[in-house]
Image (cartoon, rainbow, N blue to C red; front, top):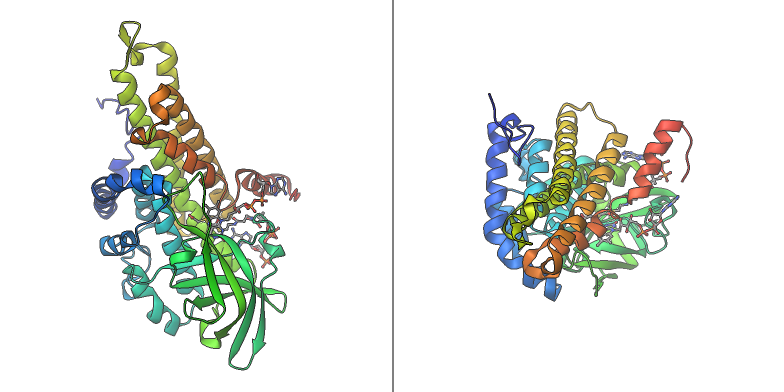
Length: 388
Ligand code: TGC
Ligand code: FAD
C-alpha cells in the first residue's frame, strides 16, 4: 500500500528517466544554492547578474535539448521542462533568461539556420558566452505580430533593416538578436549582431514585475545585415511561432514551479502560525485553500508532463501548448495571489517571496501569448471560427 504524498500525489518523480531525474536534481541544487540567495536584492534593485548566464551554461541548462555538436545534451522535452520548473521556483525572471536563450534565440538558429550559423553561434550560446534575444513584439500591439512594421530591404550583399522592437527580454545585454522583419511582405528571421551599425538597445525601467529580468527595446536604423545572417530555413509567421511553441511549453512547467514554491511556503507558514490558540493549518477554510492549490498544481504538472512526452514523440499540436500555457499561467497566478493572502501582512515582504512570485506571474500570464489570446486560439480550434 502506497502512502499519499502531498507533494507528489501522482508520483511524477517516479515516472522520470534516470537522466531526467539527474537534470532535475542539478537544476534544483543550482536554483536553491546559487539563485535563491541573490533574488531578493536583484528584484529590489532591478538588476540581472550577467554571470548567471555563464553559470547556467556551465550547468548545461542553455539549449539543453540540442544535439551535442551544438553544445546541447540531447535532453528530452520533459528534462527541459524540469529545468524551467526548478528555476522558476526561485524567480520567473531567471527562467525567462534561460528560456529566451534556449527556445527563442538558440532554437531558431538550430531549426532554421545554416550549418555555418549553427557552428558559429550555438556552442558559445550554450556556454553562456554569447547572450541572444528574440525580437518579435513591437510597441503597437504584441498580440498581433503579423502587423509588424519592421522592414528588411534587399541590398548588395545582404539586407537593410529599419524599425524597432519593444518588450524584449535581455536585449540590453544581448550579443545578438534574432529579429523578425518583413522582406517583401514575408516575415523572415535575421541574426543581428551587437556591433552592427544602427543597432541599439535601451532598458525599460520601473517594471513592477519580472524585476530581476532585464527587458528592453531594439532600435534598427538602417542596419546592414549580411546575407550570411539571414535564417534561410523559414518564411512567414511559422518561424517565430515555432520558437514560441517551445518556450510556451517550458513556461507551462515553469509557472507550476513558481506555484509549487508558493504552496510549500504557505503550508509551512500556516503550520507555524498560531491564531486563536491553534495553528492556522488546523482550520477548515485554510485546508480547503491548500487542497485547491495542490489540485491545480498537480493537474497542471500532469498536463505539462503529458505534453512533454508528446513533444518528444512528435505527436503534438500547437493548440495543446496553448491549452497548457494558458491554464498553468492562470492557475499559478491564482495560487500565488492566494499564498500572499494566507501569509497575511508577512506576505507582502520580500523575504517571504510569495508576493514577488505573484507580481512576476502577471507578466508570465501576458507574455508569449496573453491568457485571452490563447483562449481565442483554442476557441478557433473548437468552433472553426476566428474571433481575433
Ligand atoms: P495565423 O493565421 O494563426 O497563423 C499564421 C501562420 O503561422 C502559422 N502558425 C504556427 N506555426 C507553428 N506553430 C504555431 N503555434 C503557429 N501558429 C500559427 C500558421 O500555420 C500560419 O502559417 P501559414 O503558412 O498558413 O501562413 O496568424 P494570426 O496572425 O491570425 O495569429 C493570431 C495569433 C493570436 C494566434 C498569434 O498572432 C499569436 O499567438 N499572438 C501572440 C503573440 C505572442 O505570443 N508573442 C510572443 C512574443 S515573444 C515573448 O513574449 C517572449 S517572452 C520570453 C520570456 O521572457 O520568457
Ligand atoms: P496587447 O496585444 O495590446 O493586448 C492587450 C490585452 O488585449 C491583453 O489582455 C490581450 O489578451 C487582449 N487582446 C488582444 N487581442 C485581443 C482580441 N483579439 N480579442 C480580445 N482581447 C484581445 N516579446 C518579444 O518579442 N520578445 C521578448 O523577449 C519579450 N519579452 C517580454 C518581457 C516582458 C517583461 C513583457 C511584459 C513582455 C515581453 N514580450 C516579449 C512581449 C509580450 O509577448 C507581449 O507583451 C504580449 O504578446 C502581449 O502584447 P501587448 O503587451 O502588446 O498587449
